[in-house]
Image (tube, one colour):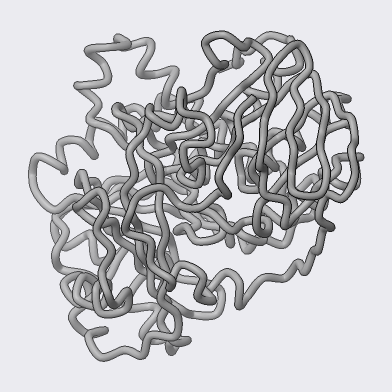
Length: 409
């Protein structure tokens, strides 16, 4: 038996601003409300965590015919990283290609790019299948500050074209970069139309609505207080419990040592964003003729995108594991002005942030507990969770269902 403390972000630098209204909460189109768990029930699978990992796995299981699934969320759906991220649909791997190739080889590298691209494909297909209003806009730009990073983009260009030969992929250098993004700080930009952007909270809520329609039971305001492992697991909340054959931990940076075996596999850093006021069409055209989503490829990135309301969402990560700036808006305004000096005095409507769990190699972690093969976990997206969570959870659901975890590439 394990008695658990209430889920909260990992780390010591907890800032009350984490609960402030952000762009996603202010502009969500789905107003779903699920009850708290107030009874003792049974399920085939119980999932702890109501973000992309939990909901995506539940939906994948339901599509495979496993509909007696329960999702427990301590706060509300999307309270964690899913409801406060950049909405970046990235199809790359976010790593130094040569370093990865040393570990997995040339064929392994090609497979990784194909798998990453499958995640973006799942997002597009799910939006179509369930008519999810998630503001998906195609077009992603990977940005280089220097010649070393430009060399990486040239390598990515080759891998993308090999993995997705039918997609529009183009490298811009020098002054050509201005055709993609209106900043003079970059020497290269790789445009990939297979990537793009979404309103991640609407994507989550639309997926939750789809899962619920297929029979998945979702409970909000239901923090877990106790877990008992065994042939059957029992998960207790303050007012109810779930008995299930299998359990999935999908809490990421909000695990809070509830399961030490996996808690110690990640460390936490924080990411912060701002949203500008709606800008003029002329200014948006200057910022990005592509109206796309962008990130540079430094170890600690800036990332941004233009929204359907003509806002610029701009985000960054802290360079310290447990450092929280006192003023989210001021922190990102400085970085924003370095990229777009002409936006130095733009009005900021929203500023928010939150923790993210990082793995040692920056790849997501999935598996089962050492002594409990019916207890699964997924975590450690390292700030790149929107796209990978969709393909990773497809693989995870197949594993939970006892099927093959092979992916056709």
